[in-house]
Length: 72
Image 1: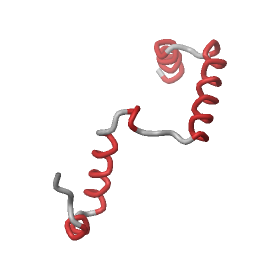
Image 2: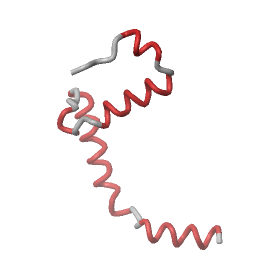
Image 3: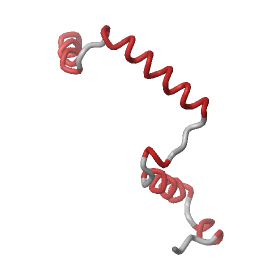
Image 4: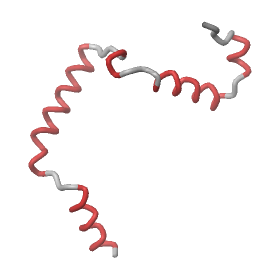
């Protein structure tokens, strides 16, 4: 595997470096990204909150219709 040398990395513009980082990040599967205990706890908390709030949610179709009435 050929990695970019520090000199080659330094020649990349900041947007090119960010694009490279994004490409590397996107190449990982969810299972390949370990979560810390704190992150897992927060994820669980957010999932629980979503499930509790779900009965009060409206569908995307209903929301679009309501927005069309208000803005149309």
